[in-house]
Image (cartoon, rainbow, N blue to C red; front, side):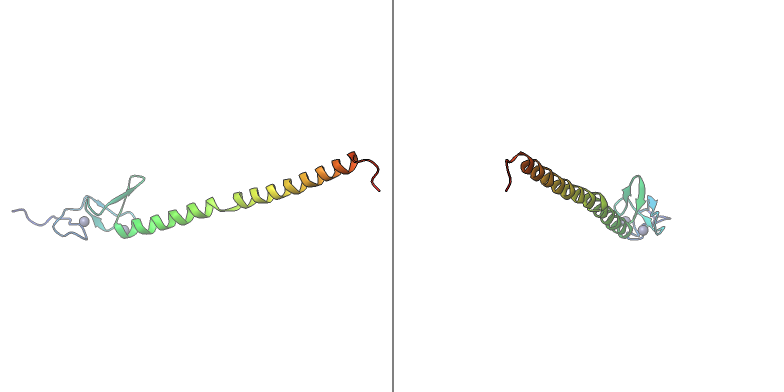
Length: 96
Ligand SMILES: [Zn+2]
Ligand SMILES: [Zn+2]
């Protein structure tokens, strides 16, 4: 029989904590810990971090760069159409 750990996991009183959550300072065992870039997070805080990370990635993926590319594409399309139209008008004979 072993006594209860001196620093038990907040979720598992019978387990000894291996680390502390960097966000909420909760003691967490090897089952509860999730490492993000080598930093310990408890389950709840990891979920919050994952949410923030997902939002940030989505925001950057569909952010100004893609909108700017679309605007540039439309601008090039318009300029190209005008150029072709001008060349055709110049090449066609007479025009009357
Ligand atoms: Zn936490
Ligand atoms: Zn635990």
